[in-house]
Image (tube, protein in one colour):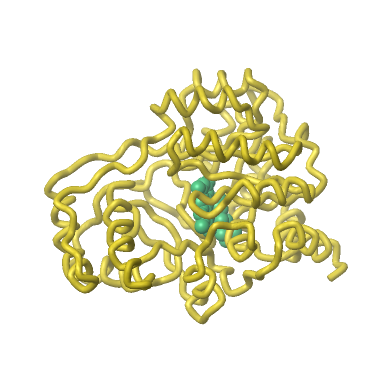
Length: 354
Ligand SMILES: Cc1cc2nc3c(=O)[nH]c(=O)nc-3n(C[C@H](O)[C@H](O)[C@H](O)COP(=O)(O)O)c2cc1C
């Protein structure tokens, strides 16, 4: 291992991490979790640098405890005009249904951290205690700059090869994301073969094969789930879907209602919404995007532009049929309670006290 891990230096009171959730996690949520003794997280992957700075500073004003800031390290989109217009043509009937015309062209709606110097400078200036990476790793120079600023570094792995790359790059912890997980699958190369390992199997493999601390993510909804991951050798559990129904999240009323309905029982890993595999509650856009003979969606995050525009067009009619409502397989187990209470409940359950 190139550097000793500094994960333990965070001195978390509880082995519970609230997952970064771009568009759902907020300063209030991250601070509440950190103040309760876990590790709160912000997802800034889809934010501008100015929005991200504001979120980090707002969180710093709400807690003195460590929190995590997560960025997206995807390969920049491969632009392909023919593929993009075929995708728009395929979505045209859905746009028509909500009284809109499809856009003429699509955009890469946010840059990758791999080439975002302004985002790096902002992180070095605001210095959150932890920075985590999803979809890959930045280059050695960027990693060294963040490490020298005293920032603890973590990254998502969905298989042992990605975990090995994370260890080789000298990070402090590996987030082992199983196939159950809600939101985007953090695989480095979405075109590569995927063994779709469960959280339990992936954690066990990584605990056996890696010397870095392993954080379990995917399908963990209660303290019993946290306990089982600790028993498998994880140092902490990272929960996303479990925190969506907290009042501190920015999930809207439609999303909350869906998560508390029968729809929570049907999640699917699909590239239709954004161009990369991600798990969310099944909706008519996913079903239309996956029908027989459908074209390949535009590349990530270009396809996301189409989905977001479609949802914006329907939103004026108070409809959310086409909204991306990310959720993991454990979605029906999500509970509506304040974030600090959820952390306390998870701790009590994991100790067999609830
Ligand atoms: C709404 C939502 C948004 C997410 N956004 C991010 C993100 O911005 N960055 C990231 O690394 N992971 C993101 N994830 C994935 C989580 O980090 C984590 O892997 C996942 O939530 C674990 O599975 P669970 O939802 O079953 O707990 C997101 C998950 C959800 C549910």
